[in-house]
Length: 293
Ligand SMILES: Nc1ncnc2c1ncn2[C@@H]1O[C@H](COP(=O)(O)OP(=O)(O)O)[C@@H](O)[C@H]1O
Ligand SMILES: [Mg+2]
Image 1: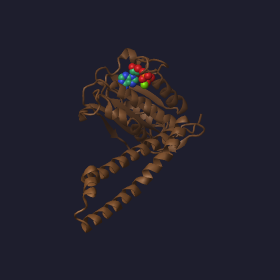
Image 2 (image 1 turned 60 degrees about the vertical axis):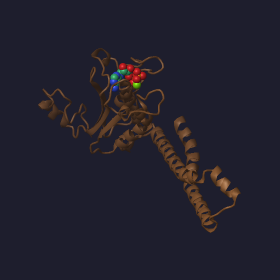
Image 3 (image 1 turned 180 degrees about the vertical axis):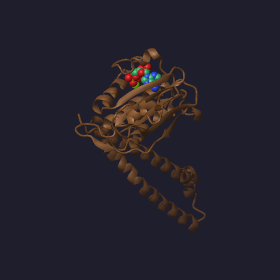
Image 4 (image 1 turned 135 degrees about the vertical axis):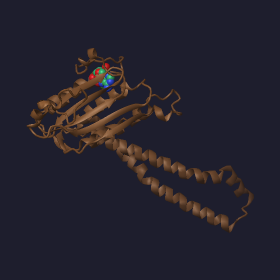
Protein backbone atom coordinates (compact mmCIF):
# COMPACT_ATOMS: atom_id res chain seq x y z
CA UNK A 1 0.00 0.00 0.00
CA UNK A 2 2.94 2.25 0.57
CA UNK A 3 3.91 1.82 -3.05
CA UNK A 4 0.45 2.91 -4.11
CA UNK A 5 0.67 5.97 -1.88
CA UNK A 6 4.05 7.00 -3.22
CA UNK A 7 2.92 6.42 -6.79
CA UNK A 8 -0.06 8.70 -6.22
CA UNK A 9 2.17 11.38 -4.75
CA UNK A 10 4.46 11.25 -7.76
CA UNK A 11 1.60 11.11 -10.18
CA UNK A 12 0.31 14.60 -9.42
CA UNK A 13 3.47 16.65 -9.95
CA UNK A 14 4.35 14.59 -13.00
CA UNK A 15 0.99 15.46 -14.44
CA UNK A 16 1.79 19.18 -13.95
CA UNK A 17 5.07 18.82 -15.75
CA UNK A 18 3.65 16.76 -18.53
CA UNK A 19 0.60 18.96 -18.93
CA UNK A 20 2.66 22.14 -19.10
CA UNK A 21 5.13 21.00 -21.69
CA UNK A 22 2.81 21.51 -24.63
CA UNK A 23 1.88 25.12 -23.78
CA UNK A 24 5.55 25.81 -22.94
CA UNK A 25 6.49 24.66 -26.42
CA UNK A 26 3.76 26.75 -28.00
CA UNK A 27 4.65 29.90 -26.04
CA UNK A 28 8.24 29.54 -27.09
CA UNK A 29 7.27 29.14 -30.70
CA UNK A 30 5.20 32.32 -30.42
CA UNK A 31 8.20 34.17 -29.03
CA UNK A 32 10.34 32.89 -31.86
CA UNK A 33 7.77 34.10 -34.34
CA UNK A 34 7.90 37.51 -32.71
CA UNK A 35 11.69 37.47 -32.84
CA UNK A 36 11.69 36.58 -36.50
CA UNK A 37 9.24 39.40 -37.12
CA UNK A 38 11.70 41.80 -35.51
CA UNK A 39 14.61 40.38 -37.47
CA UNK A 40 12.75 40.87 -40.73
CA UNK A 41 11.69 44.39 -39.90
CA UNK A 42 15.07 45.39 -38.46
CA UNK A 43 17.70 43.34 -40.31
CA UNK A 44 20.52 45.46 -38.91
CA UNK A 45 20.12 45.67 -35.15
CA UNK A 46 22.12 48.02 -32.99
CA UNK A 47 25.42 46.69 -31.55
CA UNK A 48 23.90 46.02 -28.08
CA UNK A 49 21.32 43.67 -29.59
CA UNK A 50 23.92 42.02 -31.78
CA UNK A 51 26.01 41.43 -28.67
CA UNK A 52 23.14 39.72 -26.92
CA UNK A 53 22.45 37.52 -29.96
CA UNK A 54 26.08 36.47 -29.84
CA UNK A 55 26.20 35.98 -26.09
CA UNK A 56 23.23 33.71 -25.95
CA UNK A 57 24.14 31.98 -29.20
CA UNK A 58 20.64 32.50 -30.51
CA UNK A 59 20.84 30.07 -33.38
CA UNK A 60 21.95 27.22 -31.15
CA UNK A 61 19.45 28.14 -28.49
CA UNK A 62 16.52 27.92 -30.88
CA UNK A 63 17.62 24.56 -32.16
CA UNK A 64 18.47 23.15 -28.77
CA UNK A 65 15.26 24.27 -27.12
CA UNK A 66 13.21 22.04 -29.38
CA UNK A 67 15.27 18.97 -28.47
CA UNK A 68 15.25 19.93 -24.85
CA UNK A 69 11.47 20.00 -24.69
CA UNK A 70 11.27 16.77 -26.66
CA UNK A 71 13.48 14.96 -24.19
CA UNK A 72 11.60 16.41 -21.25
CA UNK A 73 8.44 15.10 -22.78
CA UNK A 74 9.91 11.64 -23.26
CA UNK A 75 11.16 11.68 -19.68
CA UNK A 76 7.82 12.80 -18.25
CA UNK A 77 6.04 10.17 -20.31
CA UNK A 78 8.37 7.50 -18.96
CA UNK A 79 7.71 8.57 -15.39
CA UNK A 80 3.99 8.56 -16.04
CA UNK A 81 4.16 5.04 -17.41
CA UNK A 82 6.19 3.81 -14.48
CA UNK A 83 3.84 5.42 -12.02
CA UNK A 84 0.87 3.91 -13.79
CA UNK A 85 2.52 0.50 -13.66
CA UNK A 86 3.23 0.90 -9.97
CA UNK A 87 -0.39 1.77 -9.35
CA UNK A 88 -1.60 -1.21 -11.33
CA UNK A 89 1.00 -3.39 -9.73
CA UNK A 90 0.12 -2.47 -6.19
CA UNK A 91 -3.59 -2.74 -6.76
CA UNK A 92 -3.52 -5.68 -4.42
CA UNK A 93 -7.15 -5.93 -3.50
CA UNK A 94 -6.52 -9.00 -1.44
CA UNK A 95 -10.11 -9.07 -0.28
CA UNK A 96 -11.46 -10.14 -3.63
CA UNK A 97 -10.30 -11.81 -6.77
CA UNK A 98 -10.93 -9.99 -10.01
CA UNK A 99 -10.85 -11.01 -13.65
CA UNK A 100 -7.66 -9.65 -15.19
CA UNK A 101 -5.64 -9.82 -18.35
CA UNK A 102 -2.49 -11.74 -17.44
CA UNK A 103 -0.57 -10.24 -20.34
CA UNK A 104 -1.15 -6.76 -19.04
CA UNK A 105 0.27 -7.86 -15.70
CA UNK A 106 3.37 -9.29 -17.33
CA UNK A 107 3.88 -6.23 -19.52
CA UNK A 108 3.59 -3.98 -16.52
CA UNK A 109 6.13 -5.98 -14.63
CA UNK A 110 8.49 -5.82 -17.60
CA UNK A 111 8.09 -2.07 -17.69
CA UNK A 112 9.10 -1.82 -14.05
CA UNK A 113 12.16 -3.95 -14.81
CA UNK A 114 13.11 -1.96 -17.90
CA UNK A 115 16.16 -0.43 -16.24
CA UNK A 116 17.56 -3.84 -15.38
CA UNK A 117 16.83 -5.30 -18.81
CA UNK A 118 18.55 -2.40 -20.52
CA UNK A 119 21.40 -1.73 -18.16
CA UNK A 120 22.54 -5.16 -17.09
CA UNK A 121 26.14 -5.74 -18.08
CA UNK A 122 26.83 -2.08 -18.59
CA UNK A 123 30.38 -1.09 -17.86
CA UNK A 124 31.11 1.19 -14.97
CA UNK A 125 30.91 4.39 -16.98
CA UNK A 126 27.40 3.43 -17.91
CA UNK A 127 27.07 5.45 -21.05
CA UNK A 128 28.56 3.61 -23.99
CA UNK A 129 26.84 0.32 -23.61
CA UNK A 130 26.92 -2.06 -26.46
CA UNK A 131 23.43 -2.81 -27.75
CA UNK A 132 24.07 -6.52 -27.35
CA UNK A 133 24.49 -6.15 -23.60
CA UNK A 134 20.75 -5.71 -23.37
CA UNK A 135 18.59 -8.58 -22.35
CA UNK A 136 16.24 -9.50 -25.13
CA UNK A 137 12.70 -10.30 -24.12
CA UNK A 138 10.75 -12.49 -26.48
CA UNK A 139 7.02 -12.59 -25.92
CA UNK A 140 5.03 -15.43 -27.29
CA UNK A 141 1.56 -14.71 -26.00
CA UNK A 142 -1.34 -17.00 -26.69
CA UNK A 143 -5.02 -16.17 -26.71
CA UNK A 144 -6.03 -16.24 -23.08
CA UNK A 145 -9.27 -15.63 -21.26
CA UNK A 146 -9.40 -13.24 -18.33
CA UNK A 147 -8.18 -14.90 -15.17
CA UNK A 148 -9.92 -14.44 -11.86
CA UNK A 149 -7.13 -13.83 -9.40
CA UNK A 150 -5.40 -11.49 -6.98
CA UNK A 151 -3.71 -9.43 -9.65
CA UNK A 152 -1.23 -7.72 -7.34
CA UNK A 153 -0.06 -11.02 -5.98
CA UNK A 154 0.26 -12.59 -9.39
CA UNK A 155 2.27 -9.63 -10.60
CA UNK A 156 4.53 -10.22 -7.64
CA UNK A 157 5.09 -13.76 -8.89
CA UNK A 158 6.05 -12.52 -12.36
CA UNK A 159 8.31 -9.96 -10.76
CA UNK A 160 10.08 -12.58 -8.64
CA UNK A 161 10.59 -14.97 -11.53
CA UNK A 162 11.74 -12.28 -13.94
CA UNK A 163 14.16 -10.87 -11.37
CA UNK A 164 15.69 -14.31 -10.92
CA UNK A 165 15.98 -14.68 -14.69
CA UNK A 166 17.76 -11.35 -14.92
CA UNK A 167 20.04 -12.34 -12.03
CA UNK A 168 20.85 -15.58 -13.81
CA UNK A 169 21.83 -13.65 -16.94
CA UNK A 170 23.99 -11.18 -15.11
CA UNK A 171 27.43 -12.33 -16.17
CA UNK A 172 26.39 -14.34 -19.19
CA UNK A 173 27.63 -13.62 -22.70
CA UNK A 174 25.11 -12.33 -25.20
CA UNK A 175 22.68 -13.16 -26.61
CA UNK A 176 20.91 -12.99 -23.31
CA UNK A 177 17.32 -13.90 -23.75
CA UNK A 178 14.20 -14.17 -21.65
CA UNK A 179 11.30 -15.89 -23.34
CA UNK A 180 7.79 -15.50 -22.01
CA UNK A 181 5.27 -17.91 -23.37
CA UNK A 182 1.61 -18.10 -22.45
CA UNK A 183 -0.97 -20.61 -23.54
CA UNK A 184 -4.15 -22.27 -22.53
CA UNK A 185 -3.47 -25.18 -20.25
CA UNK A 186 -6.24 -27.46 -19.34
CA UNK A 187 -9.49 -26.72 -21.11
CA UNK A 188 -11.84 -29.16 -19.49
CA UNK A 189 -11.83 -31.76 -16.81
CA UNK A 190 -11.26 -34.63 -19.19
CA UNK A 191 -8.08 -33.04 -20.45
CA UNK A 192 -5.84 -34.68 -17.93
CA UNK A 193 -6.92 -38.12 -19.06
CA UNK A 194 -6.12 -37.29 -22.65
CA UNK A 195 -2.74 -36.31 -21.48
CA UNK A 196 -2.06 -39.40 -19.45
CA UNK A 197 -3.17 -41.42 -22.47
CA UNK A 198 0.25 -40.89 -23.82
CA UNK A 199 0.48 -37.44 -25.31
CA UNK A 200 3.27 -36.57 -22.95
CA UNK A 201 4.94 -39.94 -22.87
CA UNK A 202 8.33 -40.19 -24.41
CA UNK A 203 8.32 -36.50 -25.12
CA UNK A 204 11.18 -35.13 -23.14
CA UNK A 205 10.83 -31.53 -24.20
CA UNK A 206 8.00 -29.61 -22.59
CA UNK A 207 4.72 -30.70 -24.10
CA UNK A 208 2.15 -28.34 -25.51
CA UNK A 209 -0.42 -27.90 -24.21
CA UNK A 210 0.81 -28.63 -20.79
CA UNK A 211 -1.27 -29.03 -17.72
CA UNK A 212 -0.98 -30.38 -14.24
CA UNK A 213 -4.41 -29.20 -13.16
CA UNK A 214 -7.82 -30.71 -13.60
CA UNK A 215 -9.67 -27.43 -14.06
CA UNK A 216 -9.49 -24.96 -16.97
CA UNK A 217 -6.21 -23.11 -16.70
CA UNK A 218 -3.58 -20.96 -18.32
CA UNK A 219 0.13 -21.66 -18.41
CA UNK A 220 2.83 -19.02 -18.22
CA UNK A 221 6.40 -20.05 -18.92
CA UNK A 222 9.30 -17.77 -18.27
CA UNK A 223 12.61 -19.02 -19.58
CA UNK A 224 16.11 -17.61 -19.55
CA UNK A 225 19.32 -18.81 -21.14
CA UNK A 226 21.30 -18.03 -18.02
CA UNK A 227 23.34 -20.09 -15.59
CA UNK A 228 20.79 -22.81 -15.01
CA UNK A 229 20.27 -24.64 -11.74
CA UNK A 230 21.95 -27.84 -10.64
CA UNK A 231 19.76 -30.76 -9.67
CA UNK A 232 20.93 -30.44 -6.10
CA UNK A 233 19.84 -26.81 -5.90
CA UNK A 234 16.60 -27.37 -7.81
CA UNK A 235 15.25 -29.40 -4.90
CA UNK A 236 15.47 -26.41 -2.62
CA UNK A 237 14.56 -23.38 -4.69
CA UNK A 238 11.02 -23.17 -3.31
CA UNK A 239 12.19 -23.37 0.32
CA UNK A 240 11.88 -20.17 2.33
CA UNK A 241 15.21 -18.40 2.76
CA UNK A 242 17.02 -20.69 0.36
CA UNK A 243 19.37 -18.63 -1.76
CA UNK A 244 22.61 -19.08 -3.63
CA UNK A 245 23.12 -15.34 -3.85
CA UNK A 246 25.37 -13.24 -1.70
CA UNK A 247 24.07 -11.53 1.40
CA UNK A 248 22.25 -8.39 0.44
CA UNK A 249 21.39 -9.44 -3.07
CA UNK A 250 19.19 -12.42 -2.27
CA UNK A 251 16.81 -13.07 0.56
CA UNK A 252 15.71 -16.44 -0.72
CA UNK A 253 12.07 -15.48 -0.46
CA UNK A 254 11.16 -14.86 -4.09
CA UNK A 255 10.23 -18.37 -5.11
CA UNK A 256 8.84 -19.49 -1.78
CA UNK A 257 6.47 -16.52 -1.80
CA UNK A 258 5.60 -17.25 -5.41
CA UNK A 259 4.86 -20.85 -4.50
CA UNK A 260 2.56 -19.71 -1.75
CA UNK A 261 0.72 -17.29 -4.04
CA UNK A 262 0.36 -19.72 -6.92
CA UNK A 263 -0.36 -22.95 -5.07
CA UNK A 264 -2.11 -21.83 -1.93
CA UNK A 265 -3.90 -18.67 -2.98
CA UNK A 266 -4.78 -19.74 -6.52
CA UNK A 267 -4.75 -23.55 -6.45
CA UNK A 268 -2.22 -23.44 -9.24
CA UNK A 269 1.10 -25.10 -9.89
CA UNK A 270 4.62 -23.80 -10.18
CA UNK A 271 7.53 -25.88 -11.34
CA UNK A 272 10.98 -25.53 -12.74
CA UNK A 273 12.91 -27.13 -15.56
CA UNK A 274 16.59 -26.33 -15.76
CA UNK A 275 19.79 -27.45 -17.36
CA UNK A 276 22.97 -26.12 -15.76
CA UNK A 277 24.84 -23.98 -18.24
CA UNK A 278 21.88 -23.80 -20.58
CA UNK A 279 19.10 -22.03 -18.75
CA UNK A 280 16.01 -22.26 -16.67
CA UNK A 281 12.29 -22.29 -17.26
CA UNK A 282 9.74 -21.53 -14.59
CA UNK A 283 6.27 -22.79 -15.37
CA UNK A 284 3.29 -21.26 -13.65
CA UNK A 285 -0.15 -22.67 -14.15
CA UNK A 286 -3.18 -20.80 -12.86
CA UNK A 287 -6.77 -21.95 -12.93
CA UNK A 288 -9.02 -19.61 -14.90
CA UNK A 289 -11.39 -19.52 -11.95
CA UNK A 290 -9.80 -20.29 -8.63
CA UNK A 291 -11.69 -20.37 -5.36
CA UNK A 292 -11.34 -17.40 -3.09
CA UNK A 293 -9.32 -18.00 0.02
N1 LIG B 1 16.16 -18.33 -13.39
C1 LIG B 1 17.03 -18.85 -12.51
N2 LIG B 1 18.27 -19.22 -12.91
C2 LIG B 1 19.15 -19.74 -12.02
N3 LIG B 1 18.89 -19.91 -10.71
C3 LIG B 1 17.69 -19.56 -10.25
C4 LIG B 1 16.69 -19.02 -11.11
N4 LIG B 1 15.59 -18.76 -10.37
C5 LIG B 1 15.89 -19.14 -9.13
N5 LIG B 1 17.13 -19.61 -9.03
C6 LIG B 1 17.78 -20.16 -7.82
O1 LIG B 1 16.80 -20.25 -6.80
C7 LIG B 1 17.23 -19.57 -5.64
C8 LIG B 1 16.04 -19.03 -4.89
O2 LIG B 1 15.40 -18.00 -5.61
P1 LIG B 1 14.56 -16.93 -4.82
O3 LIG B 1 13.58 -17.65 -3.94
O4 LIG B 1 13.99 -15.95 -5.78
O5 LIG B 1 15.60 -16.25 -3.87
P2 LIG B 1 16.77 -15.21 -4.25
O6 LIG B 1 16.56 -14.73 -5.64
O7 LIG B 1 16.62 -14.14 -3.23
O8 LIG B 1 18.04 -15.99 -4.07
C9 LIG B 1 18.20 -18.52 -6.14
O9 LIG B 1 19.12 -18.14 -5.16
C10 LIG B 1 18.86 -19.26 -7.30
O10 LIG B 1 19.89 -20.09 -6.83
MG1 LIG C 1 14.78 -14.01 -6.35
